[in-house]
Length: 70
Image (cartoon, rainbow, N blue to C red; front, top):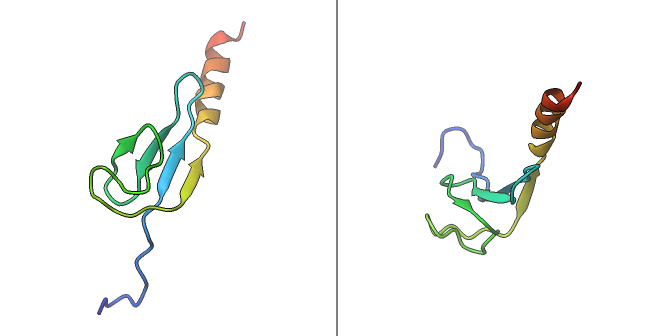
């Protein structure tokens, strides 16, 4: 029995959307990067049913905006 008393959260795919390249999905259990959200992680075998969105593309857009600004 864990000492903290908290339930372990089930693994999820973290969807990272990029500004100039394809989305990537990262397994929260092992960190495996995949091109799509599989039902089972190809690296660790974890059963995954949910996708969590990470809007990291906004930071990339801000950087490109700063570079292209006159």
